[in-house]
Length: 195
Length: 195
DNA sequence: GTCTATACTTCGATAGAC
DNA sequence: GTCTATCGAAGTATAGAC
Image (cartoon, rainbow over all chains, first blue to last red; front, top):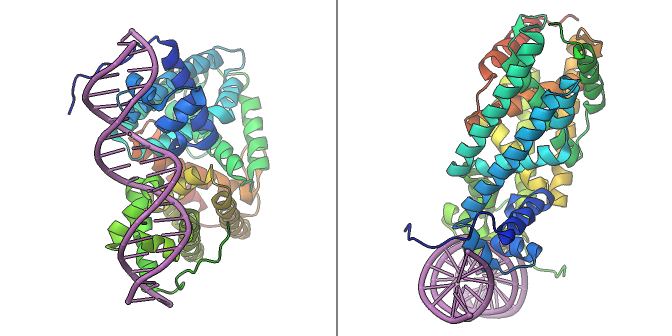
């Protein structure tokens, strides 16, 4: 294995078209629909081109992870720098496209080592950046049963956002309306950081 | 379509073996690995038998959903009837196998209508049963920013449990330790219901 | 540097033998 | 009622032409 097969250039227009098509398929039909044939068809290209630009399908998925993560790191940074960072962060976390993208990749990663490692690294980076921002805003927060570390606060927020969006997509709604209202009140209260 | 092809009996031993194999594959390698060939191989049977007992792969998945859900409804009922229902419910929700099973099916369901509908129906049932039990135990709970309905409480609990387990599986751990400790304290406090 | 012709494997599904 | 022989489509990947 590991023959020295040639690959297309990273900045190729065709390569970008394939990545775009793959991302669209991932969102619309799930990771199982991201096959060389379907990706190519969506981009109006031949299936073999996928393997010219990406040695294996795993490589394509890795490129997808990196590209999506970099874009979202940007978006998150902007949210954290906004006048209402907590609200902006929540809006960012509950964006359906972003949440779907993450959930699909997580499901895929569950059984593909290389992708899992890459996704985990990015996830920790996201959380650390959120935690840092929350720490600056609030320090440790009292929960009524002890203090909450910023990292945990970031986890709670992301977890609830992801599951809300995911269940919405499935058509599960029990408890959502009141949960969203409660979170809205928490964000309202957090609007003006204590320090 | 819809030809009147014959199907095997529901109580067939072979059928059960196939379902067991499918469940194991789903847990170990993800839904994409649940193919007629792999399921059969795992059960030591011929691939064509899958289609004798399940007209389509969707039918196999549906059977898997129903079987898994019925077992878990039982487990949840036992948890709710235990001396420490809140703790038992949390332990049940954070069981890795159960959470993985759910997440895989959710990812699959995202893009398969029939499975999505079935899964959503069961999910609502789980939540309603949890909510009913929590309502009997606590009524509405004060959160510091208004009351929390039992249904929302159930959602929060399940969401956090699922994401904890899922991130653990991916190797993401930021904020988990303190989050688990905080939840443990909450459960401790909830140990003795107020009414 | 870019794309095509082609090979080989695995997929879901059907028709028909026992 | 149970299982097998077989099919056409779709999957990843390689070697080689432009």
